[in-house]
Image (tube, rainbow, N blue to C red):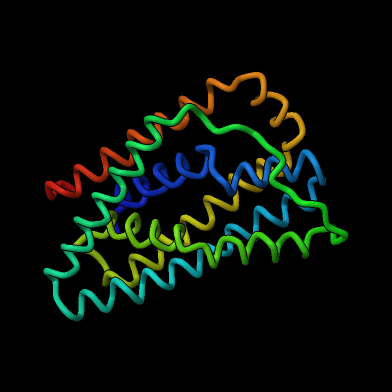
Length: 209
């Protein structure tokens, strides 16, 4: 894998992790309402859950490549269209609203919320579909075997998510108050993420990667 390929992917993963979404907003609101330990557990659980989707992507893409390179290209084009659709929705978004996503529970501490984040992320079919669409866009035909590239990219995404979500968990209380006073910022993050999705989808569709 080339350095520019990895750096491009890390940049995209970083922007996606920072952009307001169910996982990082869940970490933020847990940090405000429950505490850093619970928020950090949920954050790392969500990050570890990414490995489940990486495995599914590796198995699915590997099967397609073995069956037909044409089928793999069709998957890339379908994924490109899906990313463009996500991008358009993000561009039209009015910005994420911070809400209390937690529910009352007697369980507290790191481990219960780690399990909660892990399960919530690992069984989410929308996340699985996203990984299956997103990761193949960064595969190089002249690089390592595609399954190995997918595994490395998925692991990098999980590490980036763990770092970003963990940072949000540790700074939850002041960050939550700061974001509530700057709702426009979440809209601009949505715009940036939407532009990334649309641009990546178009470049893939026309064969420029």
